[in-house]
Amino acid sequence: QVQLVESGGGLVQAGGSLRLSCAASGRTVCSYAMGWFRQAPGKEREFVTAITWVGGITHYVQSVKGRFTISRDSAKNTVYLQINSLKPEDTAVYYCAADIDGYGVLRSSEYEYEYWGQGTQVTVSS
Image (cartoon, helix red, strand yellow):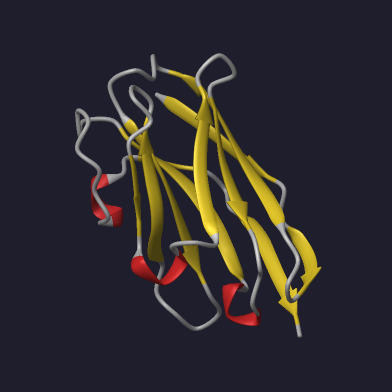
């Protein structure tokens, strides 16, 4: 079992920044990857980015490259999502998720992720 707890969401003006955190506990983390997804009102949940615990290999959806940065602190079992130059269209609930059997392969389908956090709301005002 893996427990994931997100934090760091909030209300921010367009152009601002936020850093989301996802603390993982439970099962040993080294064999899997962590992803961030988001779900905007009335839309399906979409992949944003992912990172491997070992090696810190990253993958981003094209639409967020240059503004979003995923990172991890293995000592703290925490993954971060730094979001800069926020736009109103970034408004969504942001979820972190764990893919426990990818073995270093970063995947973007939500169906590959077995464990999910409760989500944290990010609201960007114009």
